[in-house]
Length: 378
Image (cartoon, rainbow, N blue to C red; front, side):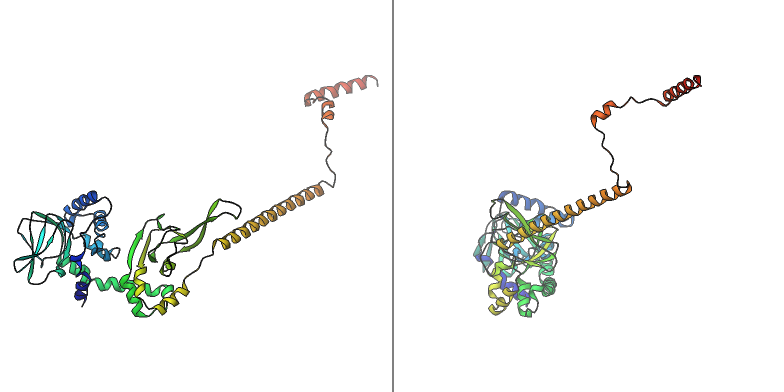
């Protein structure tokens, strides 16, 4: 059943345009060839990740982006070389991307289709009575059918079930009928972000909803500091974690994102494109829209900011008053210990008229002289 489903999903491969690697085409083509030249058993995890990052742009492989399946597939892709006229074994290999050269599809010795550089096709596209041969010396990116079937066909239900069970626990999707949960699980795929990455930027259009599997997000809103000022400030609207959702408003509106979603921890989130919700029951979507969390608008944020400023000012005044009162109480108790007598302040001119200080020895000498003087008159 699943194999038939795959044939339906991939049957339009021939009608697609050639697979073009986005970005710097030359560098990425060179890079993928270098990476795939390393034997699969010797590839490091970082190399496997790079392979998956380049191959995820292929329309067929894109659906496995972020599921874990694509990285598993990336471990087993390799480059096979074919001489002109070589038969390409469709029983041995599952999926092909022409890197250099040309290949062709033949039926009853007649050429039906030619595959040039960057064209891709799968074994499900080839009828039993057809065959594929290399026209020129060709280098073709391939994966063996045994690996493909194990990762995609045998283990596909495991990946699906994991998504289904997780989405079922999310608060936003509580009481969602199982057929709809199944649709969401089939559509969703994983995205990963590093700390300090921006997932969505305020003012940009979001293409769907994110469901946090692991990690954390902070939702930030840039707004005016005050009605009178042109200065701006950043307000934290919310902090989200496992099971929380964001960008859900994009499902029901074409308005730009109200906030910036900033990763505060390494983030893994299921992403479901808004286009996938168009096939879901409209009555369910109406109920779902009512569950979406609303955040305060700029006017409410400004009012809240003003109230907080007033409260902070009141607290500062209150603390200052308490400190002042405490100091006054301390001064009062010090005066009580001094019997209420205030120390007389000595004026500067009085200090100048004071006699010079006399050392203890000199003081004793003067006292002895005074004593002898008085004794002589006795």
